[in-house]
Amino acid sequence: MGKVAYYTQEGLDKLKAELNELKTKGRADIARQIAEARDKGDLSENAEYDAAKDAQGHLEAKIAQLEEVVGNARVIDESSIDTSKVSILSKVKIKNKKNGAVFTYSLVSEEEADLKASKISVQSPIGKGLLGKKAGDSAKIQTPGGEIEFEIMEIGL
Image (cartoon, rainbow, N blue to C red):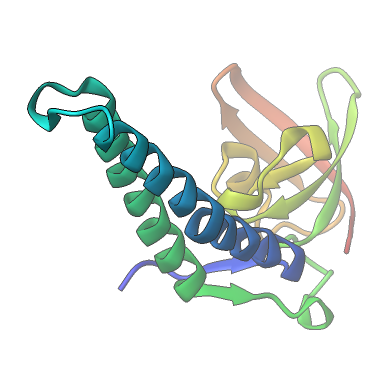
């Protein structure tokens, strides 16, 4: 049994769409490549056939991994999130105490993290450092660039 991971409905829907794409289009593409390579003759010296079989193995491994992730996924009920403290799916406004820079991040599962969309993983150093804190609290967080102290300004959804 794999580890349970929590997702937004949107994040889980994306995973399911990717899995469906791999199972349908991905498998069909690989089958076509194998058939084309097989038509080229002697399989014992056919590099294209070997490459297509390798690709098939990688595809099936990816499908198996995604099936396990989807099977262990749980959707978070946003209405049950306590906004008095930082938790998964919290939208947190923080201020770097040293330089005054203000950031707003949503804390999400590792698989949904996307820095460009201001979504950071609860497993990241900043995510871990913010979990459980309340508005007004300070958090000293050890990052790859050194220790940074943040003030939690707001917590929402």
